[in-house]
Image 1: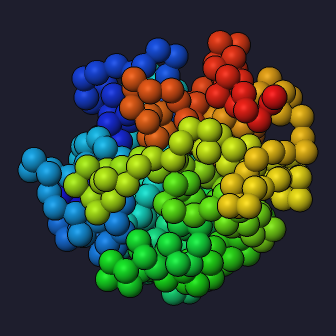
Image 2: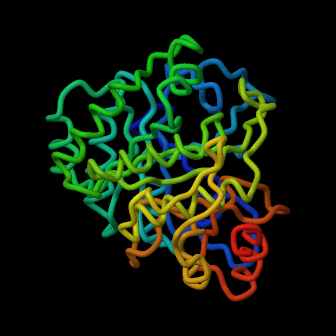
Amino acid sequence: MNSPEYIQTSLAAALSLGMEKGRFKDRVKLTGLNLLLIYDKPCIGKCAYCGISKNRPVTGGKKTFIRVKWPTYKLADILERTLTYPHSFQRICISMVTHKDAVKDTVSILQKIKDKIDLPVSLLISPTIINKKDVFYRFKEAGADMIGVALDAATPALFEKYRGSGVEGPHKWDKYWKVLKWAIEVFGKYKAGVHLIAGLGESDREMVNTIYRSYTIGAKTHLFSFYPEGGSMLQDHPAPELLKYRKIQIAAYLINHKGQSPDIIKYDRNDSINGFDYDLDELIEEGFAFMTSGCPGEDDRYAACNRPLANERPSEDFRNYPFVPDSGDRETIKKQLESLLS
């Protein structure tokens, strides 16, 4: 069962299309349909935290990704369901894996989607297998409107440790930035996004510096909170404290959406954020800073790719809200930020 005929989709998407049984947490609706390429031979990446890493053993007969199964279907069946079954999708995202056929198969899948479905389509690309800027013209001509680059680690050292030579993986920090710049040149400023995972061992200042570097070249940050994947090399690595993550969310939102300079961010001697020269009550009242960040849908203020429960379990507080926080949610966020507001 190989792409492009077959595709994996998230459990949330399969539930939304009535292809799996289950239900969402209250108020949660999936607004982004995520599709993941699949091959008999696994992704050649060996990223220490990833569920589809070549280094990760099969768990219970199947691998999970973001801690849940990603069922495999025929692409034609997914498209038919998307056309005929009630859902809330505002965008589709095709995620490549690091495989020699991924570029041509992504183009094929993209064309088939655009022939049938009137939704914007993003591509989460694999920079390691992209060696020419011309590839992005092919993606654009086939119908993609935005590009995502999963840099993930905020520093060269952490990238090397968890994605490169530290795990005998193929990925290179400089190559990712080079390919990101190609994407921006072809698709335009802020039509490319950078995935960053908070909590891999970086300081707050290092994370902010990478967010700002991305923004200055034309890419907004799609921010994730690290959450350990069972069976991965980092299965025992802790998630960052919620307050720490909230501070990074605020910093990213101020840079990406409020046009603020990092100069308004204050740090302690350990390079941890301890304040902002900005009215945080205003941000809390809006709520958007604490939502999932990613490619937009019908409202440019927040992401269509809302990835519910990708950063926490259903019993825990949302780290990335998959909907606009209501008054009760905003009170919860205010309590979580109490030490910054006093």
